[in-house]
Length: 462
Image 1 (tube, rainbow, N blue to C red):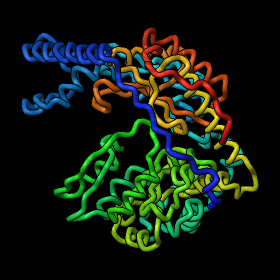
Image 2 (image 1 turned 90 degrees about the vertical axis):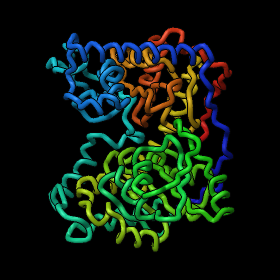
Image 3 (image 1 turned 90 degrees about the horizontal axis):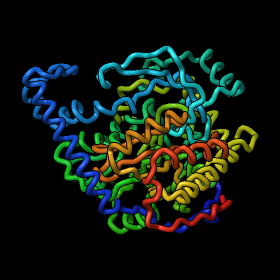
């Protein structure tokens, strides 16, 4: 690993501007009105005046708020999720057009395709989810040699030579002793945490951590986990966490599902960004589903840790190994990032992503949007607050041929619904400008809520 001390940055306090009082009041009022209408519609269904198109529920299920929410709130807006994509997730992509004749209970395809929609929702940070002929050739050659699937666990006859090569490369990339890979990023968390934590352990976890981490902790019996602040496209204050870890003799588990490859001068994640020694992180976790354009995940750290997990991890013992073509895709992307392919393409992509991130965040701040997160994060949430605004934003952006992800309650607090832009090295300045203009024009009165004066200087520093 290159010396990172010269690249280390002092942590900058991230702004999390709260909703203005009148916006919060209107948001709660809006949810209250929709909820009252939901109870009224349930009454109409009970007396036979309205038909419920969902599977019939038992009475005890109807009392569950999750089912109530699905029937009466989510169903009204579900056209904004699960849209079928019919192309690769590049800077622009194609969507299959669908319509609903029964208010989103069911959908039907029209046979038309929405072409060249700007993709602001995929985690294709470095643009490796591409159809470049040269890279696909190595993947195709690997498929011819090893086949598409392994059809076995690595404990049996699924341990391929390219798996060994990948794990050695990951350890080298991260600057640690050893690593092991898994076929599913979600299971990398959910199936390894129970192997690492047992009776008498206390887990301190971010309150809005990914479900894979929450499930991993929930698999433990009687776990009195304490939850702390949440993540909003933010970057962990790693140096301070390491200091606390050393002071209280704790173990540190670092999830870099989004940051590995995308953050740091050479893509080595948060440890590189802040100049923290990787040896100070006990368990380094990351996924290959974002910056590497592939699938799966890894756990890395000391050799004794990895050797222990090879024996005790459910994801290692019972799950099939990474498929050969996916493994080759990860190898190719990681070698490109490290410059082991003899080119500077990897570092060019990292720098382009950093430039796009700074530029787009500055543009949104200039427009007056309230945005969350770290200046180095390619995940850019903009706060919309009201459920009606969120739905209108997603629909109007698609009409302007911009594909975005919107998130609201219960995935976020009621007053913190937002749209989430995910930037890529493949985005051009023209695509970012077009997205900014569309966002500014789609939500009148929402882009001028910020009470903080933005710093419009766009740094060119790596």
